[in-house]
Length: 362
Length: 269
Ligand SMILES: Nc1ncnc2c1ncn2[C@@H]1O[C@H](COP(=O)(O)OP(=O)(O)O)[C@@H](O)[C@H]1O
Ligand SMILES: [Mg+2]
Image (cartoon, rainbow over all chains, first blue to last red; front, side, top):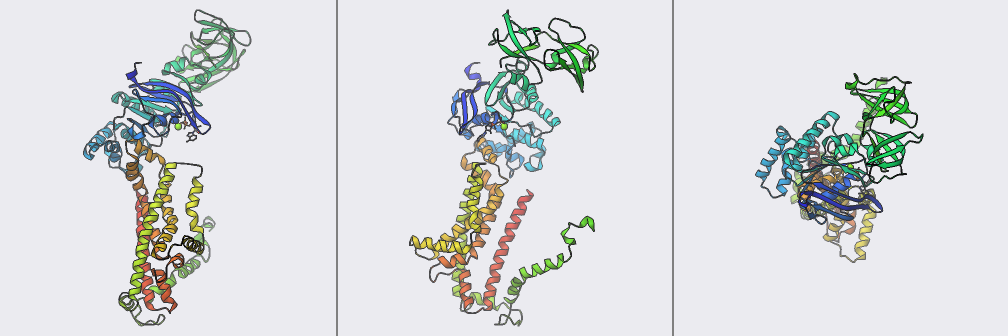
């Protein structure tokens, strides 16, 4: 990334509240026009980082640059950054149009021009007929869209969204996810989106920063994070996974040979930073495993079926491994013709697709 | 009726007790109001409808005294309520800005506590304070004392209104390029306004009818309406007192009504 293409550059940012450290040395760069997501469980510091970018919290240590400019000393109203607040924070005494026009008027637009532009924004979020209503007279989804229109109207360089969809029901949330994605493409504004919902993050983001306890765990595209998680936290937090404790015996030509507690041998792609002799965990996604009644290759793991869980689009089979914990194996329901479902009590082998196993750093 | 056994209206005697309480509360007021229109010089004998005591208040031998006292009262109430409401509004704004801080409840308590201190104690304390700093007693001492004791009254409705105002409103305004000042005048003030008006009216009424503190801190010869009325009553109750009282009651009723309609309109939006 060239410097001018970096929208936000956070370097070694630390945030302390008294003796409590909410953010520990966060460094990340967010590209211009990117849909960037901060993902992590509640309390990991997502809001804190967002508020530091917006200017509501000062940075204890480190720097934040916005398009190359250090913004530490700019108050919130001098930053070309707008926020969609978690609770929307729509002004209750103003109607929808006035709410959307507010930022423009504060930027010195005439009342007329501001209202005209606000009208266009309402068109964009399909709320034109609600222009004269007060926020309290709108549904949650509509309020959400007003908040979005209000934050987008002044055409900020970066839009910050703090769990904007968390108050909506599932159907509406799915629809808004798509709408947000489209808005981002249409406006070309850099979005920094905060969520604790990994599925939401995977669906919407160009890149995701996974955070936990004030630390950046991994940064990458949805695919990278899902398929090559760096550590146990990421593997476990994103999607579902099976974990095996292994020891690394040999590394050659990019492949690592490991063995389980019982001596069974497995090979998988080597990971930088994991050396011979290391005792680490291996992550295996349930949908990349399949079950057979005979070993298909040396890597097959022996076990016995405990139960089958039907969940609409797929069936999860729990297998008690001879040399490991219970494993989940997912079979897509569209795959039923090819894959046999085994009954509880059956002795089976769990097989993995090539490249399914991933070694985790810690 | 077992299904209704928790309905208070089903208790025997509920109606009778209610009526009795209402009579005790309002009968004296109604008697004063009615007799203020009495044509008689006596305060107990009814001789027919007349406005002579109202005329007497404005033109009678004591009218000069009452006019001056009324002028003092309204002047003090207006200034005291304005200053107290401004201070209370600033305090409330500070509380909103601070968000949820540890000493929030304590701060709230400290501002509201004077409401629970017996007025006579406040009066003595205020008097001692003025004596200690050798502040000459007069209109100014009354005004300062009124400003002080009006603050918690003004703060009460404003802080009640504050409950619905989150600190994120101001942050949203700042985020949308408003200065701190604009965030206050365009967002916080309008949101607090119903509370501010109620607070002002409450402070105004409380100041207008205060007797105990005023009587302690006023200088010799300086009167407000309540102290003037008290002075007049000491020489015997005349019907013109009833006329003044009825007019004061009228002022209170008007203010309470305004306050009521403002809060009602506010609930609708
Ligand atoms: N003003 C504050 N004072 C003290 N601690 C705070 C403050 N704001 C946030 N925290 C703490 O910082 C941590 C991160 O909070 P936050 O950024 O809100 O998390 P998230 O948005 O990821 O749920 C939490 O443990 C929270 O309790
Ligand atoms: Mg949060």
